[in-house]
Length: 497
Image (cartoon, rainbow, N blue to C red):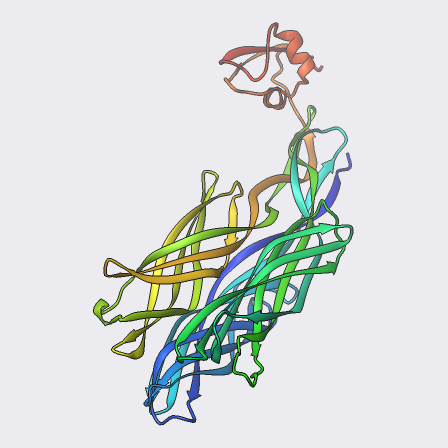
């Protein structure tokens, strides 16, 4: 008896946890003596990482943007970049593990001293690992009865980590006097593979806040820029794809025309996509084994089998009421700036994914003729059809947003797009090896009667009686499997001298 052992390489995308760090920055309004903060916004990107045994050291860049009003009621925008570093410990981390980082600024505050703004941000980074696992699996063995099952497993074909530039020539309806801030979010609408090429399509949504060219009124507009990029890859149209997208380094360039009709500008932004293509392969696994003649020692292994599902995007409409200290202070709503949405948790339940999120931003309005502001957060819950067992929903992009006064309340409405990666995760127990032991001894009786329990299968009885199905059926007329009820089972045995 020589067992045949195969080695299976499996991998699973696992959520390792959250890591928080506090990042401080200082912004200075050089052309003003005193300032008031109208809006604060910050974005974080992880730019480098080093994996050690049980720990990762990572670094990133925080971009802080402030909208301010000086003592003369002039409005201006400030921005500042600051580096940060942090570390995170987890037993799943090793020098060769592949990690994905999703940083989010979950809290931001500013303190003003004259014309200096000291900003403190809390950056929370979700960390996922692509954990590889090599397991031994028994595939065949002479002289043994083997019970098998078929499972789908994922085999990685290739991974891509690409950054490309998205450029758009934008023209607004209103004249632009001065651009105050711009913030971009990227979301993929689809990712597909065919003939060795991966195509990633999506949209860049950039909220541009500006002063109009005629009355210096603050306005904002969300610019929708579509993109489609192709990458060579070891994949085909049967590949299953997971993907993530992130916007970085948004820039605005505007040329001032002599006639003052400045409505257009050039928008450029880097988009980073991380894509994994997998092949779904059916695999026979041995779940049980026994011998008719010998006792055996059976070794088993239990592993998580992760099967990714294709990436998809969905749209959600979020709305709510903005709570203000004094609603009567709002003479006129100007716009909403810094709109963003954060997914805070999700769970799969009965063919749906129930997820929670927070829509946030800054409401700009006129109060007694002066520009004023109020931060807001609107929680929401949504359900989307999904038959997988585990979903990763990360921060979405706000496509549209508006605020208006209805019956004395400030209402906000937004349209948001989310990207979703799904995977089915099942725990599998399989036989990894067997060792033949001593020969089985029967009871010494020519006829043996046992009680078969309701629901027992042919496999159960063969293993229990150490007799093949043909012998069991020949001794028990009308027997069928699984057993419909408890019944006596008769077996004739050959007595050894």
